[in-house]
Image (cartoon, rainbow, N blue to C red; front, side, top):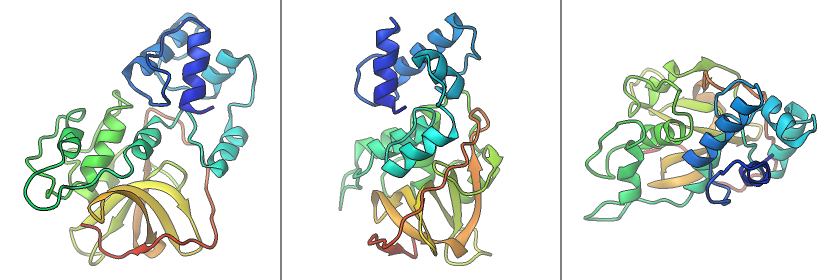
Length: 240
């Protein structure tokens, strides 16, 4: 079930998700919580398999259905941070003087203040996507530091929607890069992240650079992989 399908289902049951626009905003999350509370489910605001089964009257909100959605390029409703990341694709730094206000605003949900869009903002982007859609999730102490995301959530195998942390320049360096697993081929992860060629985009990063994959504590891992072949996306070697 996608966010758009979730919103339509909530509305049909009398729970107001706000605009039916496919964006997992606060009103959609509140509507999920209200539905869960009324139906004796765990009230976490996440449309997981049990919530979807109750909402639709069908089973099949589990891994098999979600894997199919991932293969088709859709994003399941219980990965709202990845939906938000996808929505922001194309957000780009302002060249020369001036700043993109959308990038500066990414810090609001996590209480992070940045003064300009020249600040390395891959961690800022990840923080925004998670903090704005999973308000109960604990953030790393310094989310602007890419390698700090190795302390986020729980350790998992790389999978659709997981937070991937990479070394940059060298494994021993303090520098790093962080983004979300979008897909993978034989040698590369396809990473949906910020500050990739100064924008939110999908780029390929060598699997040999991976330091770890993390998953939110407040959401059950889905263990989905998205395999692609014949990739035409360029390979990134130094994200900044």
